[in-house]
Length: 312
Image (cartoon, rainbow, N blue to C red; front, side, top):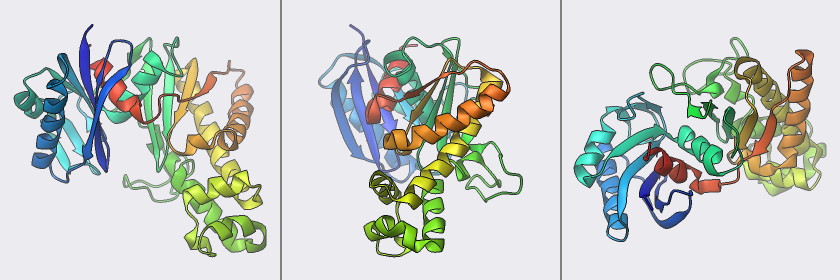
């Protein structure tokens, strides 16, 4: 049975594992994420050596945040991890590890895992959305990842949905993730709590008693307790999320959407308003509805997908 190593590089940790052909993680290593390219390469090489000492592996797949070239070798740019700019990551790691290496965007690796082994198993046309601090995305069509000409397709979080809207970290204004993400959820809750403190009693009590003290987990917890301001914040996010998904359906006609990321863990609190908005917009165009699925593989999805892509 061919074993491969999958590596998921996050902002705080590198998670690596040995994965079999069925997507089962047989062994796992976790180390802190270094802050510069040289230390990053050494850390990745180190986890590969640790896993190779225990398992007979044939290749390595790496999932990294940022723009990954279509050659699956070079990180064109990553603002949040190791300050990579045109980083020849594949060549560096192959030299350290002595194994074939492929590099892929981390949203793509997680999406691939969900299509191959998780929530979207059996679907060939899928849009995966990671709803967290922002919105990550990946597209699978005809059973293949859509990478685009330069390797950086599948960034729906940076579609401009409000001309001259809220500023985004990408440098533009009005991007979708400013209205349908974890950051947006917290902003909506704070704004409403500041204006209607008597309605946000439960929500404010979970923080420090002020609107500025509200954090994302507080909104979810308060919504589960029935706090009307927290519930309204989820309605706001779901409305924007569902409308955006309907727009993506108009372009891509997927058979399924998969929602992952921290905000999706709120379950029905997010799904209910999202589905309402999605179906309302979709039916106006008389389009068949895609299945809306919640990701099932959790924090291991990235390494599982990276390991599987290393076989291809």
